[in-house]
Length: 366
Ligand code: ADP
Ligand code: MG
Image (cartoon, rainbow, N blue to C red; front, side, top):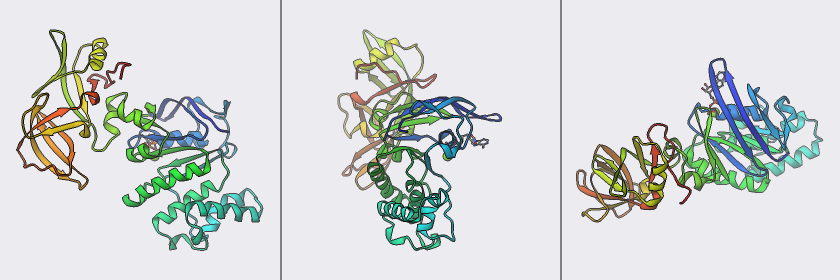
């Protein structure tokens, strides 16, 4: 089995619709991440793929064969759970090899596969220890080891790094990506952390309210979000939004809000022309705002609210009319609160969304 295809899958628990009409095709050896806020249906989707949760409707295919009716143990899938628990009385080696022992794999082969998994995860020197003698990161690796020791067709990982501290999480991100490279298997990864999704995935499916909002490569999602939810969820600090409207004057189209009148580039003019009239939301990422202490062409007058030095750069919060914007400035940037500051939005990085439903106003031309 290589390809995993979800077709219009839906899961309803009594009166909660956890997963609402999700369709996705995950390719052989792909690293696909389901990302979204807590409660958006990520775990339920994964559990349906694993066969731990019945579908309310829809179908799941492994290589075009429907598997929705198959129990978990007939699906050739290994899963790392969000809340994993190691067997406390077993050694690391016994924990990793446990599933193989249950499957009556010969002892020598269990040892060989356990050693190989431990090698890959950098825990070969810990095989005789008990879980209580391990750090959080080491325990996490053992939990991963229990999954990868099985020669499954696809690996499902549900927030495997969420119990680790921030520093270790960043480190393990790279490790997991390397592990995927080494194993050459299909990975379906779940996280609420947009940075994990951005850094590790071949493709990201952004979920909200049980639905996939957009599924594309990390850069496509970042640069061309399909709607305001995706735009606001992916990126840290998130994209800035300004509520306003479009105004047409003698042939040009401007975005207008208090303190801003922004002429729009042709690509957005074309998109807005086809869209129904009504309030819109202008979007711009912190790194796409230029700052100048003096007035200049194309700049809008704003005022510094506060600055946060990050070392590598400075996050500057500014008030522009009614809106607070965050801009990312060079490390040398320095200002004082209330100081007048002028802001310019990078023309190629402007986004427009319909205020009514948040969909991006885009034209095919980019
Ligand atoms: P996520 O993993 O994205 O945080 P989940 O898939 O766990 O989200 O949950 C999605 C929604 O389904 C939530 O509203 C959650 O409360 C609900 N839900 C999940 N499992 C059950 C269950 N066994 N019974 C009832 N509701 C559930
Ligand atoms: Mg979950």
